[in-house]
Length: 107
Image (cartoon, rainbow, N blue to C red; front, side, top):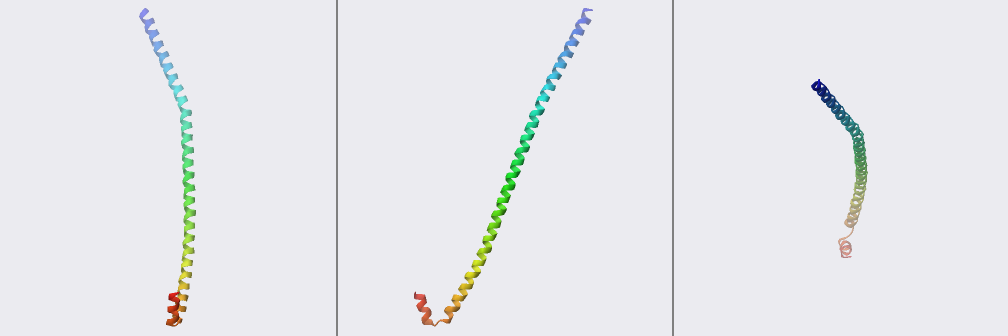
């Protein structure tokens, strides 16, 4: 009888220990889940911030490229004007006598 009673007490103690262990694990899991959610939220915010920074950088680069393209167009127009003026000056110089050209070259 004493052995049966002792075995029953040991079984009850094991079951109590198992319940306590299960409760501790459950508490750890429930404690971990909010931390995990906070971490996921932080990572999501960080990813959104990086994506916004990348979009802003792409927009800056696009605007810079447009500005450079506009400057190139302006340079091309100015080059055409300079070339036209060179042709006019050359034509004017060609119409001068050699003496007049030499005088202009000296000046």
